[in-house]
Amino acid sequence: MIAIEINGTKHQLDVPADMPLLWAIRDIVGLTGTKFGCGQALCGACTVHMNGVPIRSCSVDVGQVAGQKITTIEGLGHDGHPHPVQAAWEAEVVPQCGYCQSGQMMTASALLAQTPKPTDAQIEEAMAGNICRCGMYPRIKQAIKRAAGVV
Image (tube, rainbow, N blue to C red; front, side):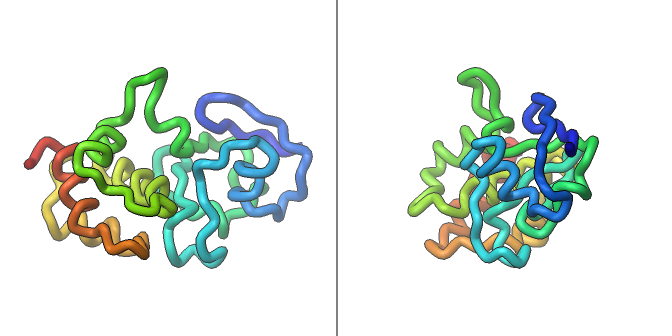
């Protein structure tokens, strides 16, 4: 059994220690907001937070996160109160297909937690590893600036 906390709920997972965290989140816990994109930690669709730090859940084994606090997109906002990043995403009409958006928002929220008023260069650097096949990068940047209150 592997003990992890996901979105404030403690879970005892009866899974192999080498199971990717992504599959434990989606298939075992049932939280499907975190997406599978590439399986190689290259696209960012599977980004979640481990103790507030963004990680690629497709390339981290469940055994590596035992005892850690994991936050998924479902845990970013609470009880009808979206996280500022989620509200900004909606206000800026960021999603097109939406597939990458949970990973984008998880990366953006981690950036803002570390750097509340990021510069354009800091936004670009932090978001560089997240791929949006729809090309919504200008809207993503605008949404991050809105969430930071620098628009």
